[in-house]
Amino acid sequence: MPPTLGAVLRARRLHLRLLTDDTRLDNRVRWVAVSELTDPTPYLAGGELVLTTGVRWQETTDLAAYDYVRRLVEHGATALGFGTGVVHEAVPAELLAAARELGLPLLEVPLATPFIAVGEEVSRLVAREEYEGLTRAFDAQRRLTEAALRGERAVVDTLAEEVDRWALLFAPDGELRHAAPESVADRSPALAAEVRALRGARRPTGVSVTVAGDSVALQPLGVGERGRAVLAVGGPRPLETHERTLVNAAVSLLSLELARTAPERRVGLRAAVLTALLAGAIDLNAAARLREALPTEPVVLALAPAATLQQRWPAQLAPHLAADIDDRVVVLGTADSDPAAGLAALTGGPVGAAEPAEYTDLPGAWTRAEAALGAAQRAGAGLVRYRDAPGGLMGLLATPEGLRRAHELLAPLASHRSSAELVASLRAYLAAAGRWDAAAESLRVHRHTLRYRIARIRELLPGDLDDPDYRAELWLALRVARDSPDAAR
Image (cartoon, rainbow, N blue to C red):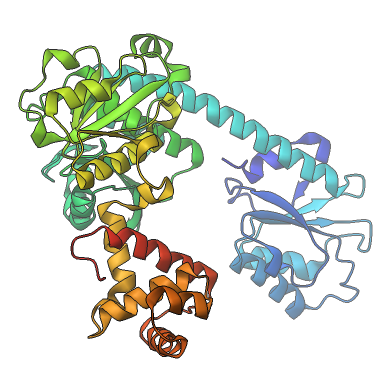
C-alpha cells in the first residue's frame, strides 16, 4: 500500500512544511511527479505528490492559481509541493488561498531540499510499505491456515477480519452458507445473478462487480465441477495486491475443505488435493510435506468419461490420486506406474493421457489430456496419449469448443444452397495458397469457375480472405470440421 502524506511529512531530512490544514494526512502518495507545466494533469494518473517551482508563473493571478489547483484536485492529485527559493521566495499567496479553498494539501519544499530527495524518500516508503505488506500477508496466511483446522466458517471469518471487508460464502446450491459479519447476510440477494453464473460456468474465473457502492470480488471454489460454491468479498474499495493474495489463499483452503466434506462427492483428502493441483492452487515449494506424499515427478494425468467406471473407487486406482471432475474420472500417477494404461484396463476406454509433466504444468496437462480423450472418442480407441494424438496443435483444437467455433466460422457457407461446392473450393484455394491453376486442377474445374466461387465466398464471409490470420482460422476450421459427421463438405 502506498505511504500516507503524513509519513512523507514526517521525514525530517526533507524539512517539508505543511501550509494547509492537517485533515488529509491519511491520503496516499502513489508517486512523485515533478512538473513545471501550467497544466500537468494529462500526465497524472492520480495519487501523486506534484512538485513545482512555478518557473512559468512569473505573474500569478487568482484565476490562474485557482484553475491550476482545481485541475489537480479533479485528477486526484494527493498534494502539491512548491519549491521556494528558485523563482519565488515564498509560496504565492494566490496559490495558497486556492489550495485552502479547494482542499488540496500544499507543502513548502525549501531550497536546500532537492526534488529528487523527495522522490527517493517516497520510493523508500513505498518499498517499506510493500515489504511490510508482504510480511503481514505471510502472517495472515498462517492465521488462515490455522483457521482451516476449525472449518470453513473460521476461514471466512478470519479472511474478513484480515482484509477489513465483509465476506459471504455461498453453498454449491447457491444458498448463503455463512456471512462474516452476520449483519451483511442481507447483501446476498444482490449477488444472486453473479453467483448463479459462476456456479453454472464450465470453466469459471473470478469476477469483480459493484453492488450498492461496494466493490465485490467473487471467486468460484473448487475446479471442474458445475454447481460449485462461491466466495464473495466486498468493501468500499477494491482489493489491494496483498489482500488479493489472502483471498486466493482462502479460496484454496475453502476449495480443499468443501471438497473434503461434501457428502455427495464421496471424495477424500487425496482427491481434494488433486482438485487443487489441477487448478494450480497449491504451491508445492511451500508445502514440503505434501510434496513428499505425492507421486514422484514426472507425473501422468489420465482422463476417462465418468460413466465408464462402474465401481467407485476400485483397488487398482489406490496407488494414484483419483477424483470425479467435470464428468471425468481423473487419475494422476508417476510416469513409471502408467496410470493411463491402468485406467484403460478398468474402463475399456476411451481414455486420454497427457505426456509426463511437472506439477507446475498440471493445468496445461489437463488441456492436453482432454484433447487426447477427444481423439480417443472420435477414433473409438481405448487409450490415446497426447503425443500420439493426430495433428499436435490440431489435437488441441479438435474439442467440442473447437468444433463449435469451426461451425460458426463456416456457417455462412454451410447455409448456402451450394455449400458443398463452396466449402470444397475454399479448402482447395487455401491448400494451394491461393494459386488459381493448382486449386482448379485439384477440383477438376476451370479456373474461371473457381474464381467465380471464391468471389461468392468473399461476399458470404464476414472477414477479409486476404488477411493471413483470417485465412489461417478458416483453414483450421475446415480441418476441425472435416472429421465431424455433420460438417459441411
